[in-house]
Length: 76
Image 1: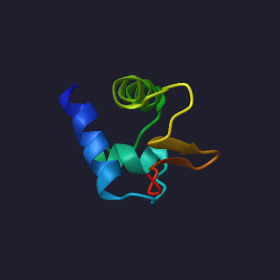
Image 2 (image 1 turned 90 degrees about the vertical axis):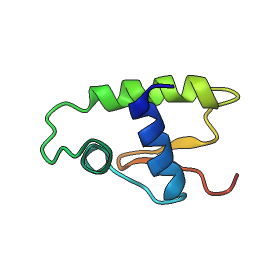
Image 3 (image 1 turned 180 degrees about the vertical axis):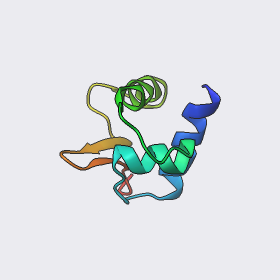
Image 4 (image 1 turned 90 degrees about the horizontal axis):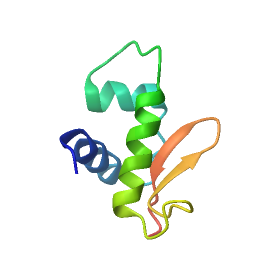
């Protein structure tokens, strides 16, 4: 696991159930305030899911909340 993958996982896990937009994740994990391209985050989450999810195609831990962002599922 890369350092940024760990930082992202730790942040989401520490805020179970709370939904964060891509912009918020860039701000809280990377310290970026203005993000013009959030594709790097999407790729990082995909890589992280491959490493921690039993079935990365149907994630149980890091889930997407459509049209809002991502959260770490609190019901696990």
